[in-house]
Image 1 (cartoon, rainbow, N blue to C red):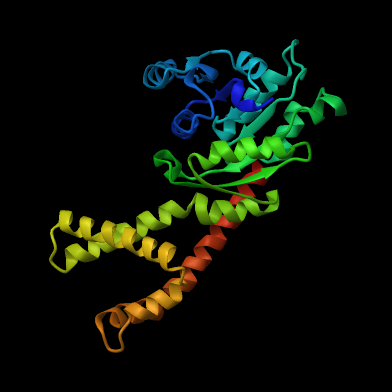
Image 2: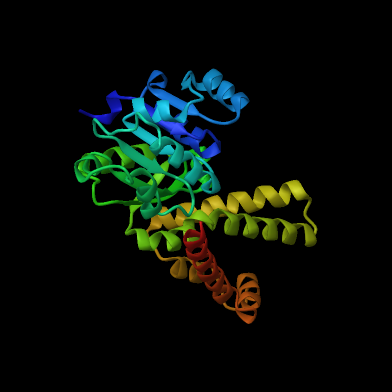
Length: 285
């Protein structure tokens, strides 16, 4: 039976959960009447119920019990408390196949298994696959990039359903879990790097005499157009950069400043630092 015919539960109802809820409904993976969400903030639940027509619930265990797909969307520091309470419920059992998708940053599959598999035997574990996902904030406008990793109990149907949900928010690629720190560093944190570039370009435009609104419009349009060029022409960034850079011209003058200040190497170092920090956080949570 397809999971799309059954309930999807969200434990945690923040911005990323909302993006998933909207994507699930818009993609027709599931109707609003098949979606249930819980959160410690009742106002948040009321808002989502009013906006999307989903069901809401204050009891995390009830959501876990009735849903065939459970999305863990709580903050990383809350995950142990939330999952321990579920696993210690006297009615806790896995009678039918249940897929857990975690978007809790830094929480490893092993950690989730330790909390939810503790009282289960192997036959129960086989019916209880777990997928860990690293999404990014452009998912909020359905332009996200997500990396996902699976435990050994995930089958092709589980993967197909997870990819359909995540794909409705943008793009998704499957990785070995050991690579998720790199995914975090590149695409998870990546929007902040782009915003930093946008800030700098706008400020540069203002410094050469443009008004802030014009500088913002020029910057955003330039970035959008540049991304479309890469996507449509199927040429490398290096080739496209060289096409724009005339010898002795304005672009070359700017790029010489980048090169003199090791901008490319510093960006690479920044991504390496983010990956290292991601690994540290995953170990310490």
